[in-house]
Structures are given as C-alpha cells and as structure tokens.
Image 1 (tube, rainbow, N blue to C red):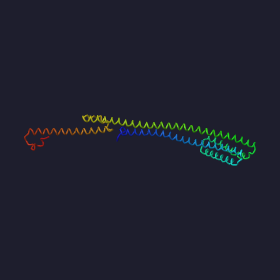
Image 2 (image 1 turned 90 degrees about the vertical axis):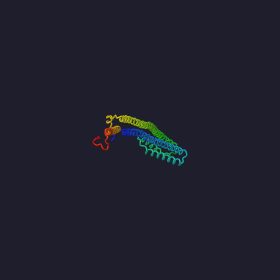
Image 3 (image 1 turned 45 degrees about the horizontal axis):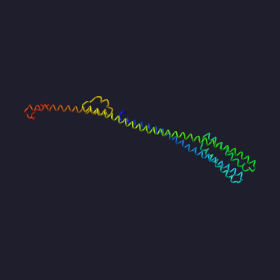
Image 4 (image 1 turned 120 degrees about the horizontal axis):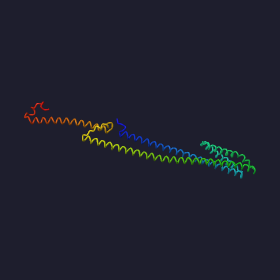
Length: 286
C-alpha cells in the first residue's frame, strides 16, 4: 500500500485543499451576493411604498379641490368625488400598514390615518356649511388637517428615502465585496492549481533523476544498499527489483563460469589423450 508521501497522494491532497479553499472563497462571496440582492429587494419595496404615499397625497389634494368646488358651486357630484378620493387614499394607507412592520413608521402611518379619518368625518359639516361663518370655520379645520397630513407625509417620505439610501449603500458595498472575493477565489484557484502542477512536475523530475542515478549505478554494478531505505516508495520498489535481478544475474554468471571451466578442462584432456571421446570415462570429466 502506498504511503502518503507518494506523488499521487500528495497531488490528491493539494487538489482537495485547492478545491476546499476556492469553494470556501466562492461561497463567502456568494453570501455577499445574496445579501446585496436581498437589500435591493427591500429598495424596490420601499420605492413602491413611496409611490403609494405620493398617491395618498394626490387623493387627499384632489379631495381638498373637490371640497372647494362644492363650496363654490354646491354640486353634489363634488361631494361624491371627494368621498371617493378619500376612500382610495385610506385604502392605500391600509395596504401600506399591512406590509410594513417598522415601529417608527407605524407611528407615522397611524398619525396620518388619524388625520385622514378626521378630515373624512368633516363631510357632514361641509354639507351644512351654508353661511360664510360656517364656511370659514370649516376651512380653518380643513387647513389644520391639511397641514398635519402634509407634515406626516413629508416625514414618511423622508423616512423611506433614508432607508432606501442606506439599503443602496449597503447593497453597493456588498456587491463590491462580492466582486472582490470572486476575483480572489478565481485567482486563488488558478494559483493553487498552477502551484500544484509545478510541484507535481518538480517532484516527478526529482524522482526521474533518482531513478536515472539508480539505474546507472546498477548498469555499472554498483548496487548500493542505501536504496533499500526507499523501499516503501516507488523508487525503492524499483531499486529492490533491480537488486534482485542483479543477484540472479550474478548467480547465473557464476554457473556459466563454472561450466566454462569444466569445458576447458575437458578440452585439455582431449588434446592430451588419443582415446576417442566416447571412450573417456565420465568420471574423468568434471
């Protein structure tokens, strides 16, 4: 079984480390992206609320206009139009209150609703304002309510605009952080993979150099016992195999030398003796 020091396991380790590092940086940047998108969603909602607040202001202003037309022309259609416009404004205000749960904003919305309800309740007094004194009295009340509505709408608008600006700033910062971390994760991944490739190439070259030195020593018959210390690695296994092969070759060389010597002795005996070779006793040839 290969040790952790082998090239394969080392490369797998660095590859896993690189994947974990790049993955961590990527998910970190992704969290900023999610945060920024959530903030932009809040900006869209607040912008929609701002438009609804403007509509409330429009309906209230239109009701005030119809109120003045009624005082001048006494046409019942102006009263109906005034009531319809106020109903639309109050309906929009109820929708905003349902969707927004900020304590500070709820207080402002409650105050605005109170002013609108108060102005709506003046409808009967408006119908009975048939003298200059009554008209003046009604006009003063309506003007006071108008100022209160204008003030509340101004505060609500300012609150929403401030929150929109803050959300946009945070979202911009989150997007910038997301962009930076994305670049860092990409370049970190490239650096890790390039570094791992260079390390793998370097380690491979080192192993090849060791292998070349070992095979050269074996080629000249220098079977160094130091190679045994690397037995647990690929180079050690290769060296052990070469050592075993060298031992077998040496053993065969010894046998060949022995057979050669016996053949030489037999040849000398043949030269000295005139006896045919098939008549020479086998015990003579050793």
